[in-house]
Image 1 (cartoon, rainbow, N blue to C red):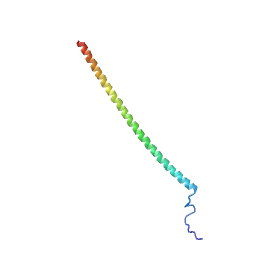
Image 2 (cartoon, one colour):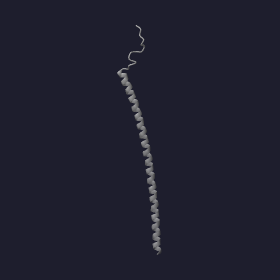
Image 3 (tube, rainbow, N blue to C red):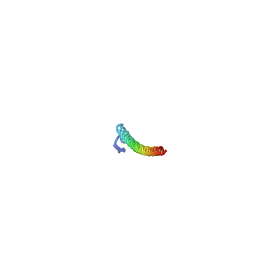
Image 4 (cartoon, rainbow, N blue to C red):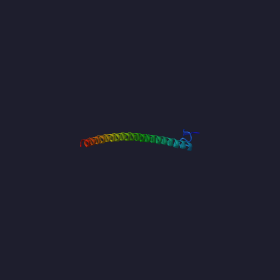
Length: 88
């Protein structure tokens, strides 16, 4: 017999198992990409939280410095008032 079809049977029409394996492979790739994107998003969130935390700490330090400065000014004014009262 002359067989003009040199391709093995089933190459043009993949079996359901091969089709399912291909779909599973594509699903795994998409899942891996999704996990990668999720990791990048978590990293960005972490970085933003760290920056925010540093800014909050700096703000608290600035406020503490301002409070100390105001307390010194109040103490100076109190001393000056006491001096003025003694000079009367």
